[in-house]
Amino acid sequence: METFDYDLQSVQEARNLARQAKLAQAELAKFNSEQIDKIICNMVKAAEENAVSLAKMAVEETGFGNVEDKTLKNKLASTELYKFIKPMQTIGIIKDDQVNKVVEIAEPVGLLMGIIPSTNPTSTTIYKAIIAIKSRNGIVFSPHPSALKCTLQAARLMNDAAVAAGAPANIIGCISKPSMNATNELMKCDEVDMIIATGGTAMVKAAYSAGKPALGVGPGNVPAYIERTANIQKAVKDIITSKTFDNGTICASEQAVIVEECIRDQVMEEFRRQGGYFMTPAETDKVAEKLFIRGHAMNAKMVGRSAEVIADSAGISIPPGTKVLLGEQQGVGQEYPLSYEKLTTVLAFYTVKDWREACDLCIKLLNNGGVGHSLSIHTENPEMAIKFAEKPVFRILVNTPSTHGGVGLSTGLAPAFTLGCGTWGGSATSDNVTPMHLINKKRVAYGIKDYTESTNTSCSDCAAQRDSSNAISEDQIMMLVDEVLALLKKRGDY
Image: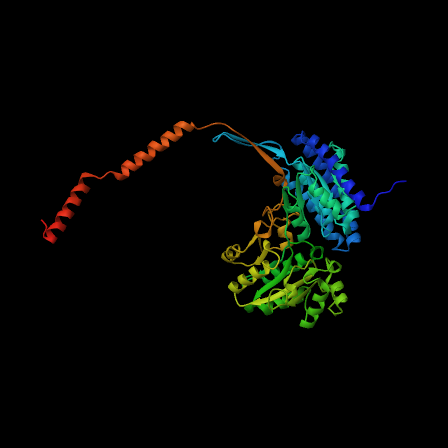
């Protein structure tokens, strides 16, 4: 009996999935708005019914986060997402400009490849599947190997729900034998028209180098500045709520707290009251040793873990009920490990003299691995919020948990698990990605100008203006004559 090596099987599976989904997408492209909405409604229903079971699978398989918050993520990726995208026009005529006589028609991109991270596997799969179908695209997922089972189950549920509501078979696929060769095959195969990459920096860069359109997102290293006018109790509550949400696995979560000297003691006391533990320098070093490998690369064993688990691993004692660990840092960079992104329940803590120093520190932190992503500020001074809007990020989140704000749970931003970082962060978009990023726009443009007449009129107008500007009135001529005569008299030449 002939057998094939695993890597060959994985590559062949990737090819088969792409070919099947491409054929299915060609059929889906013919569907109207009512048909698409019916399909999405059934996908949302399936996601809601399985939100808890998928969350449990994700926690059991990866060890990251907790069931309650992953359940909420699954609902954000389906129910809340649907409310936001339902009014979006992604099919047929989406704009009719009667003045300029330009008609815009939406066309699907084609077949998408979705790269899924281990931190938010089921929610990202649900989210990408729904926005793909809303814009009449097919999608094939490449799961993270450590989250294979739950990603595969989420993809199957989405495909089955779509097909049951009338979508072509195989419109949503997922690799069941993940490998780098299979991922590379999907990225570069002719059937795939666009890549949506959510994952590590290396994976995102690979997506952009595949030679086709890609929407990738960079890492976050979110500074949270508590300005002197802030409601300190609420600010601390927001930060802890955000940082403990699924144990810090969302890239929009806070990574460093920045406070002014004048409120430092109040902020520290409030953190202690609400479950924050300030580590000693020695304890901070022990925790940092556990958090990072190969410099400042995050240790997967510490991702999405509770403060208790991290403390036990580092061999330090913390009070019962501790929610987050805080370590004071005096700078940014290699010598200050907590100045890097930490997708877990650990925060860096900085003290500054004033808002100007806070500005400089925010920029240093962002340039240390989070440029373009997000920044959080707590203030009762609207002018201060605008000052911080000048920082090199595309989400300035004011008086809200930055995790919830960034993904659209507590703000008016689009519900999303792909948060663009713009060109500053190496992304093709600075938006929260929606179905509107997954359509092509065809334009029908009517002639509204006579090119020859327009050109001639333009030239004659220029000539008239030129003649007008060169014309000198009789009074101006007499004034010039008088000035010349006066000058000649003065010199004795007249």
